[in-house]
Image (cartoon, rainbow, N blue to C red; front, side, top):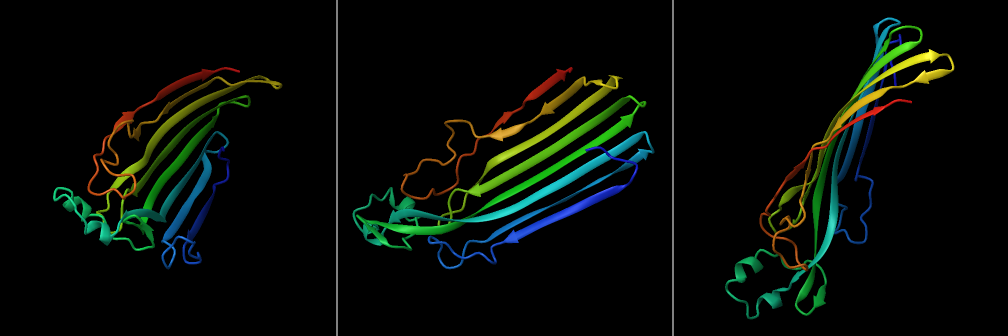
Length: 236
């Protein structure tokens, strides 16, 4: 969107939480905490009246999402059997069941964890009216987001890792030339750069563990940096 000769702007805010939520079938007592806060605004106006204009916007997302997780853990009776002394320290890290007995030495364990999401988005644009038929505008976009979630909770040591992390920074330059009133050419040039942190396949994000129990201890965390550069020229 382009600015005009009038200085104008707008703002917004959205907020919700779990205060009015009811617990679902799997929650223990009250529902897990949840807050979502989105806010931002826009502003635009003239830099040089009738010639140069600006317009920009910003938005931020803050979300803390509590989630109820159900898994299975060994019961007290199962722990009282013949357990290898080497295994005992690791077995003691696992909490006792807080739900129904599933049989064969296994019980239900329910816990909550909090997933944290943060995102910042901004975009700015400057338009220049070169003549009655020619115009030029430059646009820049910035977007950075991060999501962190623990892989275990409850009596087990909480271990958090970056589940999702991206940051993009792009700029576009567009020059518009109108040769005739009925014909408009749009040579376009832009560049997009997005470095991202990802978890490579085969890395030990969760560490060695049994599928039927929560993960214990600190996890090995590996990063791979992916950078992408794109340059595109379009004429139409």
